[in-house]
Length: 95
Image (cartoon, rainbow, N blue to C red; front, top):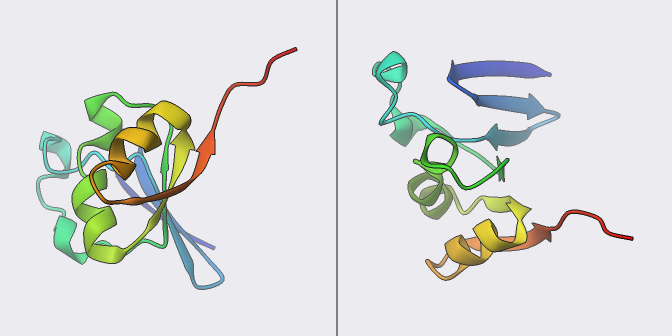
């Protein structure tokens, strides 16, 4: 496994050839100003929640790479309406 930290809560995990990107917040993040978003590849993009500092670059990277989004139902439904792959919609459990 290889981990690449991009700043804030964003990192890429490469596991057996699969690339999983977590909470892509790069372009608006001053600490990640030297990261070229256009070079980041992903098979899956995991979104912990819908705040801008966790999803800022999800649409761009998702559309460019064809990555499948994983996250909460409401957040993924919003991205799905923008044309992204979002079949892994999750919800909080209930009794």
